[in-house]
Length: 440
Ligand code: FCB
Image (cartoon, rainbow, N blue to C red; front, top):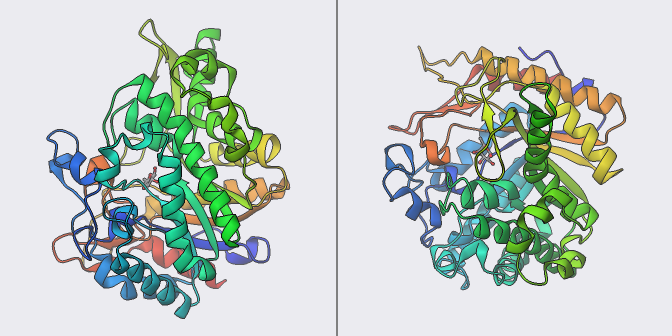
């Protein structure tokens, strides 16, 4: 059972669940174009068992049943994403079937009283645009602006909120420096360019949508608490640098119009020419900001190449991902983001949750550890609200088990269990716990 109930939160606080297009829809259906995740998955060694999102949860055909689960659970809103490669198979030309699909999806949400919270881009860049350099190419700002206009020209009148790009750190760093996500590069120059272009594309889309009269526009940042592995000054510096490139860089660009000094020093030569002149667009005013939060990292210095540090294993209990459970980080990020960056702007927790090796037994999944995770993180949200942080909603990741990127279908994050053979959905104990809490 959840220790929290709806009435413990401010009037109008929104509870929702989040998903993303490639992770659930079934990318092979409906005439979508190739996405860079199809290519990444088809390259051996990138994804567990080389699994891809071709079928995923077949949400493409089953969305009505999935939305019934949201409605029956008592959720207020649903955070979904619109696949660029579905709407524009070649990245530039609209496929009407793609827009029709999101149109049906929107109406199905509204019919059930669910507030549609769209995220334009959750990582499925059309391969045709990846061929042209993807996030390394400055033109992506305009391409993304065109995509935003195409999608919101159709859906914009019915959205509760619209976010641009899910998790800029993952789009840039995880995908171009670590190489763990598509396109799988390990290239510092590509990384610096992607870091800047992802924000330029964000701001461009905001300006375009604002110009069309679409309202309640925001951005979604992932944040990971950075802690020093010990109490030496070197470890403190390692954590501060990690904090800069993981967390501060993106919110600083969007809300302050500048990048942290450490990163300008380290990456300045790699940023695209004229980057300093782009902040008028990057800082386009927003109506809200979203934070995705899962865990913390402990950082220790080393003698290797920049950034001269590595993460070490921490002592706290871990999820199936090996991620430490550290709810204090969510509280601290909400407080810090409002204090240092967003002020009175409404904040939303746009993702939070855990993966667990759930098993279906006698038609039930007893994911008590996930309920405990939600309990601890909802307590962190309430503590931030009690300090005056304007948090207005919480969206659990995820509605259902899905394609967990490079980890394939092995990591289960859902409140609803999915049998990936039969595609049968079974609400877990955590879904029941939310249903009970949201009714109280
Ligand atoms: C976030 C992603 C989401 C999911 C969760 C576990 O970084 O936005 O798609 O993979 O992590």
